[in-house]
Image 1 (cartoon, rainbow, N blue to C red):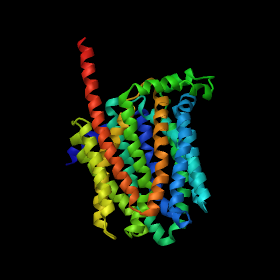
Image 2: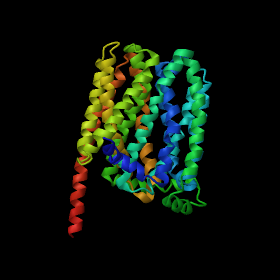
Image 3: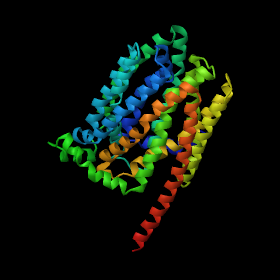
Image 4: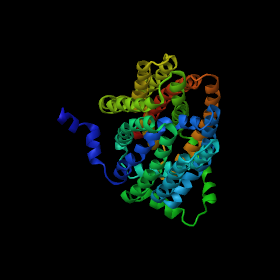
Length: 426
């Protein structure tokens, strides 16, 4: 058993980590620990301070609207400042400052301001992604992204501590303290990542090419980038899959806690336990299930995963009040499905773009996804005010779309393979 674990593909890949991939991954717990402590309680913390369901949805939608602007600028800022410096600066602004605002929040306006500033994370997401993958072997991407998920899952086991603190000190004082703690940890993480990484080779090239160039002038060069994207079906399909996961993630993140506490009558302090259960299922699937499906054509695990996510929402909707067992079944289906589809989509995002224009193409991809995702927060808020289960009915429809996109992606991949063989024959 010990030798089998020692020779497990994920363990071997972890031992081989070096350079920026190593620096980006080992600092993730510094973000994940505080994030998972407050995350399960974020929406009910807002409700406790007098924020309504519709206002929560409005905050989400306005924040996503701001993300459109920041995502658009993320490519040119990342190219001009460099991947490493951009990551440091915008990590501090987009995570540490909103955490401090949330810690002292009194009403809707505090959370709205925090959400708008937090929207700057779209810039650091682009720069950090480039920092992670640009000097990395593409064949190692699935394992690297798997370890990023695993790092987040491991720190989720700290989540029950928040429940114990809430039981001792009540909800609002506890979450205020956790947001202060998060601000400190996010700052440490940003500084540690900076010192454990180096600027990528492509980053150095783009910094030199954009030296002395205005950011607004650089934006005008997006026309050629857009034309290239429109001629690349794989990139367009990837954007569609990203949209499905983005919209459903927004809906679930905003309204899952409200559904299980108000409709299923699960105690507030028990929410973190479900986060731990989700982490356990995902970890088991990463180590047991994922290696067994690596040899399959990627469309098969993608389709099965979206069907699993779809069914998890159906189980959540029909769960009777107080039924912990049915809720765990829904979480298990969602966890195992996402453990498969998450790393696959992350790899798709990397391999379907031109490496020389990665920062700008990724920024445009994020802009499209954000623009199309932003209304879903408001829509889900309206639906939730009518019936707490309706946002998750919307999720089911989106996961159906994911199945269709996975089928289309498989068809395009086959066609591309045929063309490549024909070119090689010539």
